[in-house]
Length: 303
Image 1 (cartoon, helix red, strand yellow):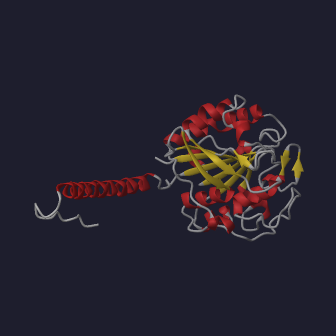
Image 2: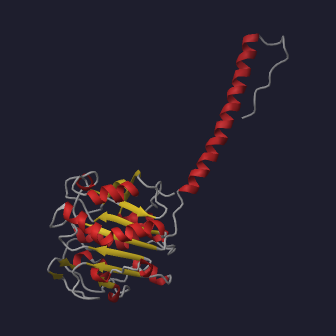
Image 3: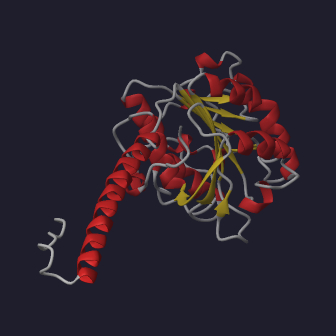
């Protein structure tokens, strides 16, 4: 807006001249603030750009609401290490009940018509999913499943192992050979695929056992990777399939590793589709499966 032009002295009362000059000064100040705000926003935009990690490991826990884990003394490793040194999504939500549809939503952007925890037909689906997108772009995917009877085994249930937590088996465009037992999780983390899903068994994931049991399992099995990830451009994402049906499906989700601002949090509402959308963009697969196309990238936590 142009500044007001002051009249020749004597033609306007002094008080009006003073007010006019004041308005002009305020206009100048507002203009300067506007320029500063635009500059500040531009700078902020550069800080929230997604990194390009070398490796991402996603560990999925079970059936607990946010407050049962985040801030709980029953989960000292999660809180004292992952939360304190990583980023917490304080408004993270699962999408439905029971477990299995949520796994398919997180992996493929859709429940794919699945509404319960029954075992699925192996390889019956051909819809796009995170693994098929990675493979199509020459990248790598694997899952590490505690209690899996053998690499590529498609058993429905063996002991504390449950196929319902392994959505990749439902897709014919994901090789069953990409599924390993947890004992195959490498100690040389440079050999990890681009994206890995880690699935503890029904005790270790807090489904049948305590929060403390699951917290210790994460520490024992993934702490070394988490420490390595911070200095090696890699990420660990811990999330849950669903809550305990008592908290509106609000779940714990924590991101830890390289380029994550330590101790940060975001109150933006995110769900499984947003996490999938973010994984797809972190890995530049140039696609979004199913409802992930309508999701958003997780922002406000990157440095």
